[in-house]
Structures are given as C-alpha cells and as structure tokens.
Length: 234
Image (cartoon, rainbow, N blue to C red; front, side, top):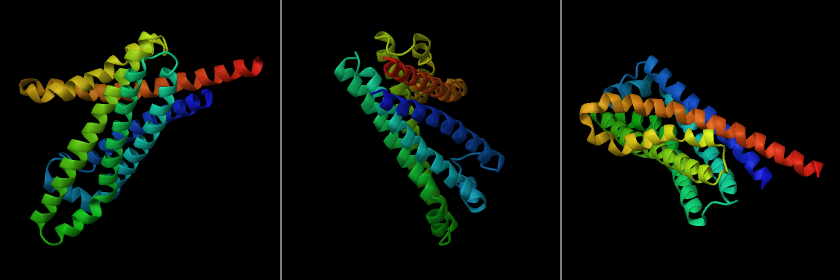
C-alpha cells in the first residue's frame, strides 16, 4: 500500500505541474492571436498558423488524465484505512470520470486541427462549422466537465480525509478553493449579472486547484517515504 501511495503522490505532483503547463499554453495561445476561442474565425486562423500549440495543449490534457487516474487510485488507498466504503467509492468514481473527460478533451485537441483544416478546404463556412463542433464538444463539454469533476473529487477527498484525519487538516481546508470552481460551474450560468465576478472566482480556483495537487502530492510522497523508513527500521 505504501508503494501505491508513493506512486499516487508522484502522480498528484505530475498533474499539478501539467495543469500549470496547460494554463501557460492558454496564455501562449492568447499571445499568438487566439483572443476568443469561441470565435470560429479566430479559431480557424489559429489552426492554420499555430495548430501545433493546440495539439501540444491536447497532449498535456491527455497526460493530465493519465496522471489523475493514478492519483485517484493512490488516494483511494489513503481513504481505505477508515473512510466509509460507499463514500470512498463515490469519490473515487468522480475522479475517474474526471480522468475520462480530460482524456476525451485531450484527444479532441490532438486530432482536431488536421481534419478541421481539411474540411475548410471545401469552404470557409464548413471549416468554421467544424471548428465550432470541436470547440463545443471538446472544450465546452469534455474539458469543462473534466475540470468540474476534478473539483468534485478534490472536495470529496478533503471532506472524507479531513473528517477521518487521514489527510492533514490544512490540506483538507484548502479543498475549499476547488469547491469554488464546483459552485461556479453549477450556478455561474444563472448569474449573468455577475458573470465577470464568477469568471474571476473560477480562474482563481483553477490556480488554487493546481496548488492543491502540488501540496497533496508532496505530502503523500513524504508520508510514504516516512512509512517505508519506519517499516525498514522495525
């Protein structure tokens, strides 16, 4: 179990680092001219000029999904000590759903530029329509769904782990930050008059979630090494 938790800790660190990289790639895309990803004209132009950046973003998302899967299973071992069985399985399942969403989003981004540009050769309007399909299905559904369910998993981990003292309380309280993303995802569409505020809260929660993964990964790696040293000493 100690080895599983150690691998899970490294996976948490990997996810945190990759999520920072994914956020940085969004900044790169904006700096290269993709001012509005929902604008098909901008999107199609970006595919033509910098499609490799879009593909790299997809690769990052795919490896985020892989690392999240390992992290979810590793932390499931932590909860297995004392957490309620049904609650633990529910939290773990939400994490695996998040991995699946992120994997789909990554595959969309990896495979999209070539086919979309090929369709655009038959007509600019066709190319823009194809881009919108990718944007809606890949970004607005798969990616948004992945980030939303990641928040649910983190909050569930913090609630169960914090109540049973299976994770440090400061780390459990930091789960409030990803919780903001869950709330924003649920109620944001109903708060049109506060859309700018909801957006700021959402983006802060994105950064806070990356920090949570890095801190949780560091804690789990240290914990597993300490446990291994104690076993060796005995």
